[in-house]
Length: 284
Image (tube, rainbow, N blue to C red):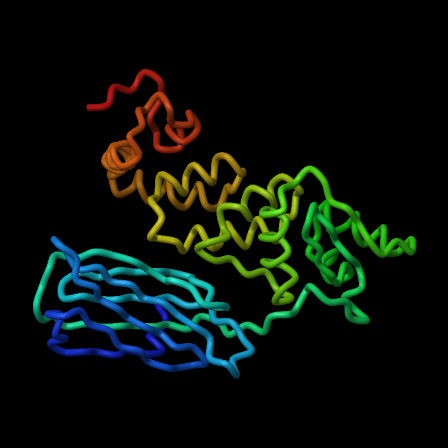
């Protein structure tokens, strides 16, 4: 069951003749909606900025409605100043604007740039360093975290990590150590599923799988590709069963191929098999 919206604000008949903007401050963050008049359209930007006293992050869903247009962002992490969405609508003079916000979770971040009595193991990758609690990370499991914990138990206090990009490692550490729990967002799931599969971090992989099962905004064929590539059986079974039972498998496949300018020859064969589409099947 979908959670209720935490906040809903409505601006009836917003005057767009010279552009328009509005800012609201709620839950430690300033949300600014700005409309800029362009030559042939209106540009809308929703941005957020943490207030000075704010010491926590928010995992949120957001919907910005401009008249009949509804722009949705799911599982966005608010932790610093950022643009949440940037969209265009046809040029108008007056329009109803609605902002809906759903707070999924309030998170307390840790500063991993500094050492503490329990975060005393330093991870270095090229120009970046993090101080982490390897006892906690080892409890998540996986080859990488276990190796770090074993090194610490031998008195080693620093590890240089190779074979993974700084971006990937930063994403993994942020998603596991920064909030002392596994946090999957719209911005990190793609990297997390790849890295956790590569290093056999099952707890992270299963959390991403649960995320993808709920992610109806991601095309079902794309989610099937994730299921096949990263051996996410529960995800694959759920999506394929839904498509086959509703008799929409071929329709959704055509739709996905058209959206991505691909041909069926480029589709992973196991995705096709999961949809009961076999090599001798003729698609119309």
